[in-house]
Image (tube, rainbow, N blue to C red; front, side, top):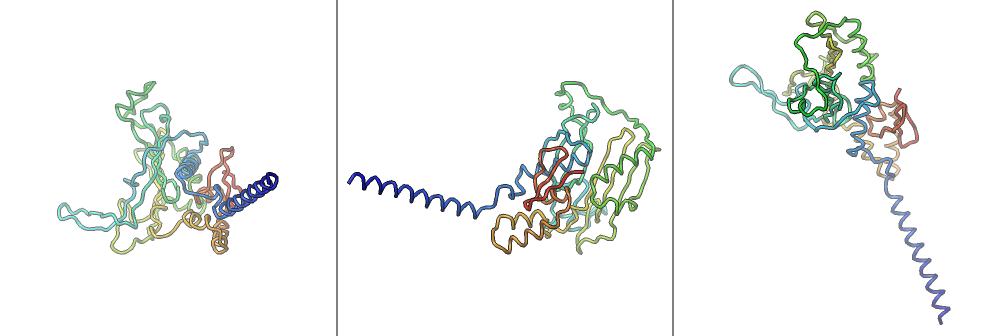
Length: 306
């Protein structure tokens, strides 16, 4: 009896383990691989940082996430109504046109000045929408380990040629279609060379009837180079994209976790649209910790940040 019981127990244990393994691998096959899950907060941050570092031309730039906020003062779209007094207008924000940006700051001061660069990225697609200078508050200055230099009222001048070299370098790194629109930028100079501006405008763009924008009702790209070689950058093209269109990242996020043939076909079609590093990170895929930076897609392709 003892021998028969022992063989029966062994058979029961083996059968149980087999069933458990079958269930485990079945459930595992129904889940998307971890590498295909996109748009997590950490991945969004990683993509934002790669976008900012690429624009600044500094792969080791140290940044700190500050807050998610509205893209002001350079973008707002809503219902326009005239004010009863003063002759101005009021813009009431509408849901489909509400935009938000992730705000980051450079950890180091701008050449030991009492100021830092602030960066805004579109939360829908990680595109850089603004680079601006933020002066430190008195309490921040007091907490510094070393003193910083205050800006004087006299901005040095810079030649157009030198400013243009800097400006075109930033724009070429920021805009995938730069070569197509390079000659459409309008140049202006202020204060005898203390600042130089290049601006692109899409004045043919039309908002839906009843809506208006502030300060512009159409997409713009502008960059200002100051005499001390600091910059101001604004790009509202991605913010003006329709609020009801799904981005490539949104569509991939929807189809990647699914295992049916229709979803796989849809994902393959979407992945085929990705042809370079920028498109890869804009689609929500992670940037590898390597030099040069590399972005991989689930279909086995790899793109290098050139």
